[in-house]
Amino acid sequence: MIKGRISIKDVSALAGVSTATVSNVFSGRKPVNEALATRVREAAATLGYQPDRAAAQLRSGRTNVVAVLVPDLTDTFFATIVTRLEALANTQGYDVIVASSGDQRSVEASRLEALLAWRPAGVIAMPCSNIVPEALVAEAGRMPVVLVDRVMVPSALADTVTIDNRDAGAIAARHLVEHGHRDIVLAASHMDIAPVEQRMQAAADHILQETGRRATILELGSSVEEGSAVVARWLERHAVPDAVIASTNVTTLAVLSAFARFRIAIPERTSIVAFDDSAWMSARNTGLTAIRQPAEAMAEAAWERLCIRMQGRGAMPPTSIVLQAGLVVRSSVGKRAPERAGASPPGETSAETRHPPDPPPPGVERVH
Image 1 (spheres, one colour):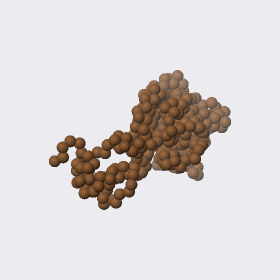
Image 2 (cartoon, helix red, strand yellow):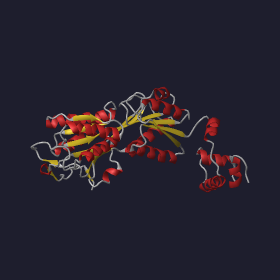
Image 3 (tube, helix red, strand yellow):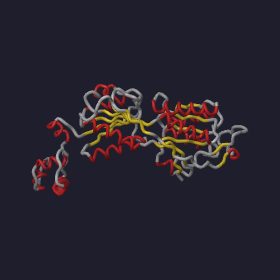
Image 4 (cartoon, one colour):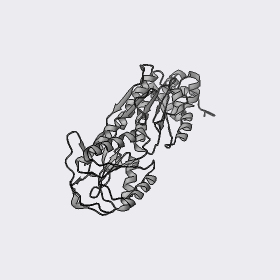
């Protein structure tokens, strides 16, 4: 029986291979015959061996760790990106360490400090604000960095991967206007976050241009409970709107929670266009029409750019990749008649002003 800490020598002895072979299996530095690699992994599992990543890093002066910073891991959009990044990293022998800032800049700074202490091979960061953390600014010249989502484009600091947020906001507004909606509320999380501001401003501009009406913008914050309370207080003082565009899946939940409190039926009383197209949006009795962000494609683009930089193949200046979002049509948007006699109080349905949704235009996905 082996006593004390299991070493690479113990694994090599049980597997009947050299210590170099064991090292290559776990580091990925050199390819190993699959049969030998299987023997090594089985021997390691039998002995309970775990590679000492820190020691390997000190010996080699390099690391196979990639750091990922996100604003909120409970947000399915960011969680989807992280999951895809982990899968991509695994195929190339990298480990991923993840930290969440909780949408707070002070927390973001400390989390980033902890991530950088690992001396990662590269960093993929989704900042919690428009301001790139100072630690990343300092490291960008020495280490590969890719910024995703909440960034100003173009950026002179690093490669960026975003969506066309202005186009996404205009798509949502156009869909509602084409269905006869005029009194539209825009439910933002924080208007000082670039993607949210761009979505909401583009939607407001389209609504004003096409209807002559100014949209109402409500800032709901970063939590469902906080946002729901903001919407509820607003509904107590205003008529129920024709429609709502929610800027994130969190604000979508906040709006739905407040609507449930006032018993506002969707789409009979008010239509809604959500953002991010989370799985739960199609699991409702009334599926939500939503702007679908290409989260996995964003992760793939970010990983490709990071690999280019880590391998020293990237040409300066930094590259900005902008992907397109799309509209997924379900049943949460109804058609409103051109003339409306008057607004109903919260919870009261004006069924006579509603009609079944029209078929989607070419290029728009209809999901049942």
